[in-house]
Every structure is written in C-alpha cells, then in structure tokens.
Image (tube, rainbow, N blue to C red; front, side):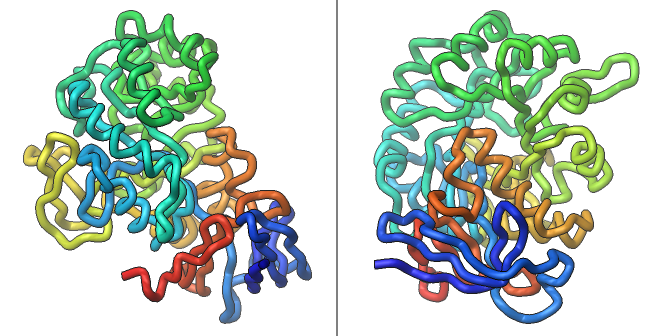
Amino acid sequence: MSTHLQGKVLTPQGFVDGRIEFGADGRIVRVEGTPIDVRKVRDKAGAIVLPGFIDLHVHGGGGHDIMEGGDSAARVSELHARHGTTALLATTMTAPMSDLELAFAGLKSVCSARSPKGARVLGVHLEGPYINGGKLGAQPNFARPVQTAELARLNELAPIRLITLAPEIAGNMDLIESLCAAGFRVQLGHTLGSYEDGVEALKRGAGGFTHLFNAMSGLHHREPGMVGAALAHAKYSEIIPDLLHAHKGAIRVALRAIPHLYCVTDSTAAAGMPDGDYRLGRHKVTKCLGGVRLADGTLAGSTLTMDQALRNLVNELDMDLIDASRRVSTHAADYLGASDRGRLSAGAWGDAVVLDRDLTVSDVYVEGSSIELAHAG
C-alpha cells in the first residue's frame, strides 16, 4: 500500500508543485510535479515539503539525556521528530567507561529498531572522551587519548558512526587513518591544536570539525589555529546556528569558506522543556534566557531544534530555502555517507517534513510513515 504527500516539494533539481509517493517499504517511489521558483514557494498558503532534517549531534531533548541509558534515546528521538528531524546520531559525553557502557547498552535497541513516533537513530556520535582536557567546554573532565580496545568494546554495544577527537593529544593523530579505514568518521573538536595539527589531521582522513568556533583554538592572523584550518581547508563542518554559540557574522564567514557547512543542534535534555535544571552527562545544567549553561556561565549544549535552525538560516541569515534545506539535511547525510537520506527522490527513504509558509512544522514522515504530529503530545 502506497502513501501520497502533496505540496510544494523540494527535489534535488528544485521545487515542484506536485506530490511524493511512498512505497510500502518506506522508500520514495516517485516525485512528480510542475517546477516552481523558490522565490514564490512562500508567497501563498499551502504545504511546503522538504527532506527530513538530519542532526548529527544530539545529547538530549524532552527532559531526557542520552547518557541516562535505558529508553532515553527513544524519548529523545521522539522529541526531535516532532520538530522535523527524521534521522540523528545519539551523542555521548566525555565520561568513565562505566558511564559510557550504560549509555551504549541503552542505545543498542534504538539503533536497531526505530520508535514508531521517533526519528531514525543512525548510530552514535562519540564526542568524548578522546579530547583535550584543556578545552573541555561543557564536557566533564574525563578526557583521555584514544584507546582502541575501549572503542572496540563500545562499538560492539552500539554502532559508532562519528568520533570527535583532539589531534594534538599524544597518539591520537597516528590513529586517524586506521579509525577511518575501520569505517568511523573522524572529526576534530574540543582541541587546543594548531593550524598545522588541523591540516595534518585532514590529510590523514579526518572529515570535519565539531561545532565550529566552539571549544577549539581560535583564528589569529599569526596563529590561525584550528578555526583557521577549518576555514582554509574543510569541505564539511558542523555549526550550531542558535545565534548564541556563534555570531551571525561568524556563521556568514563559515558559509563563505566551507562548501558543505551543515547545522547541528548540540541539543540537551532541556530542548522542548521549560526553564529549569537538567542533566548533561554528569553535569547539572540550567536552561534560562533561551540557552543552557553550567553554573559558571559556560554554554552547555543548546535548546535548539532543527526547525528553528532552518528558520534562523532563512529569517536571520537571509538564506534561500533550497540552500537552507541542504544545510539542515542533505550535507549532513552526504558527510555521513547516507546517500539515501536528505533528499526527496526515487529510491531514497521517505523522510520528509511538511511546513507552512512561516516554516512551522505541520507533519513529519519518517521512512514513509507520518508520526501523526497532531497526536504526538
């Protein structure tokens, strides 16, 4: 039995006024319609259909933290699905091995079977512990060099897709090539490394940078730092467009420099919740004034959801809807090697977000099925 979705649909070739047909297997059978100018898509009322959002950096949401283990990841996936995210990476914190094993044990089932009302959890983003203890940001202080036996054990519990590491830490640089050869995506973050460290890590196979500008050595004209390496050489990088983690001007610089810059939320348990105290790994964090912070004022992840990220790109950065859609979907899929996600075309998974002219989410399809947003709570 097939399902149809009608509206102003963004295909890889541009918008069409038409429809998508989803097959019984959850994949797109066909997309058809009459081309429409992107500048006219929001002129009149009617459904706007974009590829589902893809978020490669998610710590929590709806009051739940990935590090809690149990069914927390399923609940997190449901909160973000209501905001248009159809696929994500559950992201862990720097922690002792016992804490990581607890989190990974809970992730095993949600990585193999999707919650009916949730986004597809594609695997794990291991943001720590292989980072620099001098650039923790909001990470707890359990940083250590890459330990291959530990990594292998965790990967047996749940599939690791992405590893953040600091290349300047002894031994880390030398392992980048073997990690990439083993199928992990490696990116650079929470680092005090130099420009030269960043360039060398990219040569060895590192693919991108974790929340660009945040928790890394900054750009100076005589010491370009890790930010300089990213701006000069990266093809891909994360950025958090909540307008707290990076100034609009800094985001514009990154957009000009990095061809496939893509958005992540770095969201915490506080996403979708009222102001108050929440957990982020072993830390207590406080949501107030639109942000999440440690007691000393350090930004500690965000409350961002991907639909708000899209609106920020369009409304605050004056980006056209096609480019904005790629930044919250297609580029992340391509970076992860998920060529059957992040696009509305025949053969791809039926992941779609339906929005009104104000870019407010009205329905979400994950693998061809509506999550029934009106009844999702």
